Length: 316
Ligand SMILES: [Fe+2]
Image (tube, protein in one colour):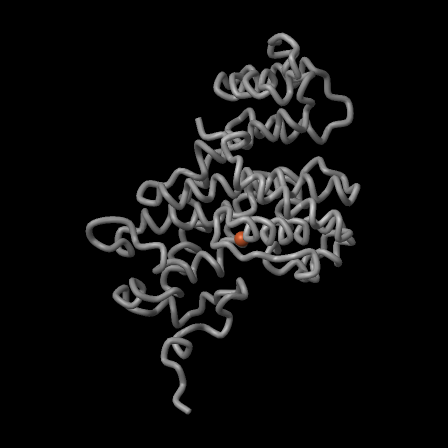
């Protein structure tokens, strides 16, 4: 039987998040780089690891909030001072606190009141939601994919938090893990879009041309950027291993939580092609000790997020 030339061209690591950047790749002429996954992977790796590469900027307020969220004795005044440095985040926090979900019919409140109403973890999560919306999932030439990724990130945050609540896990960082889990894809597309020699004339490189690169490399890139941001190790680990949770060494199992989140997103067709599943359909549900009833309620939640996106999706 003849070998399939398509498969023969693929590296053995295809789909396993293990693209090798070897010396042979480095020495290839630039024309080959334009058409090979390894060539693009090398360009992304070179860009990310170069001293001059500016990772997406994390606003000072988001850094402050993620730092003080880990401190045991934080005052409301500390949080208020951090938030007031960034009017756009302060405005978003006020808006969320005064939304129908949080206000529950009570009158509008001050910034301090909004912080008390939401709590520190939620204030930090709202800040990162704004960062994701305005700085990560915004890549010229890929607006439709960015819209899908933004939707999947916010739904992913909600689902990851709900999984942890079912499991009675510490939910403090669950939303951020779900929110950021595929940010590596947006960062790769941003880098590919900026690699002049890798962009075809007349517009951005089509998504299908970079699919293998994104599939193999987005987890590493997302984890790398979160690490550079100084986010907690559990988030870095969850992003790095969210397609291979068996490789995670973190005791909190957040990589598995995010993997299950991905399965739920696929079940509802949020951000990816729809792949329906059932409570009995995925061994990972049981690795997390989710009961069939809990899985059914998570599948229903994913479907309702898909059907009622106007109720939760923040795009403005
Ligand atoms: Fe992913």
